[in-house]
Length: 358
Image (cartoon, rainbow, N blue to C red; front, side, top):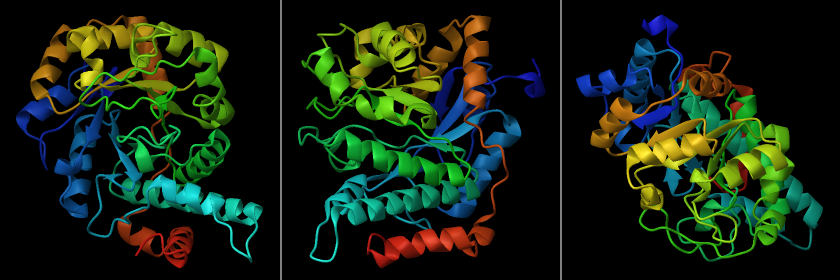
């Protein structure tokens, strides 16, 4: 199969450093590869990042280049002109801000405008450097229990979370970027960190659907991708949500009518270890309803996954069709052009006025 006739496969993997090495190139060219996710180690400055993304696209123009770039403590590019965006909790706090001269409705309107500005800046800056997609927004509710979520969440209130996420998504869309709600149905109640443990949420299904899952239901067509949690909800299924047909097929696809892309969370995380092996984990995730599986920080396991994973032509075609919808459709302005763009200046001005950025 030539590079030009390849379709994106269901595996999203990472690369080792600031430029591609021979092993990176070999993995990216594998027919099961459909995406490359970047980390802080892949960024030193804008010029280097732009060169790296161009290298990836030269190998495979159909590969989706993604990154975890939310604002706050989860933002991979923070220097060389990148705006260090506030944590999403700051936006929730803006919503609830009350002074003698400000009513709640006005505070809510300001918070929504700020969320749109954050989404626009986030997407516009990344796209100017050749990054297609960011895994944001976090839709988890802040119950004050999960350290790994914490200030990454907008609010404890599902209505505020929905409204601010919808506004942020609109900012992303205006800059030509899709979105990804995470971590379905909700990681805010489980105390353990799924990077290093297997979190369990003992609540009944009805309670989760009436709180944590509400933003997914309400966002509906404006949600283009979803990442499920590596959390076990034993009253619903024995498997973590990302490996569960109940959560992904019966609830997310059928009950909530979600038509977008479902990404597994990183299969190298401890929360995925219940599968036994990375290949079994990918099998379980794809069988449960994921369109794409992520594998990060383990090139040895990436080789194992690419050599051993079996995906039917029908499943690969379905995944490719959905993944293609996340690819930006219009060319992005260069970094230099972006600096003089009125929308970008307006968005940054709003955040500076409210002292949310320097």
